[in-house]
Length: 95
Figure 1 (cartoon, rainbow, N blue to C red):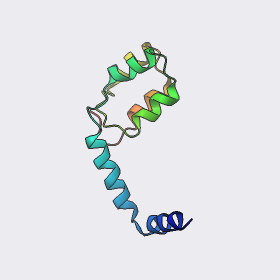
Figure 2 (figure 1 turned 60 degrees about the horizontal axis):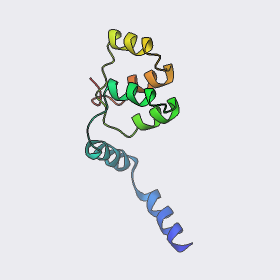
Figure 3 (figure 1 turned 135 degrees about the vertical axis):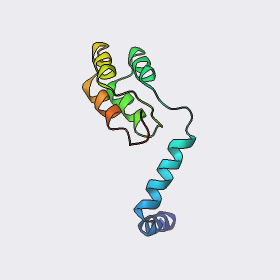
Figure 4 (figure 1 turned 60 degrees about the vertical axis):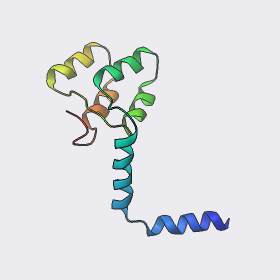
């Protein structure tokens, strides 16, 4: 219980910007960037749209979200929720 209280109190003292900066650093060291082909490969392997969307959130992303690429994703039956997550990937983390 003491450890929980200490962690809880420490979490209250950390400014939100520090947490965001830490998350940005994590994105940089988690390996290669996700690209459109990674998304279609995961879906073709049978992963659910929810899992693919969850993978996008903590990853470095270099998605092509041009109109032509979005049309190609839709033609490949990529769910709208996954396409939306790709489009909403943080600025500077996609092409």
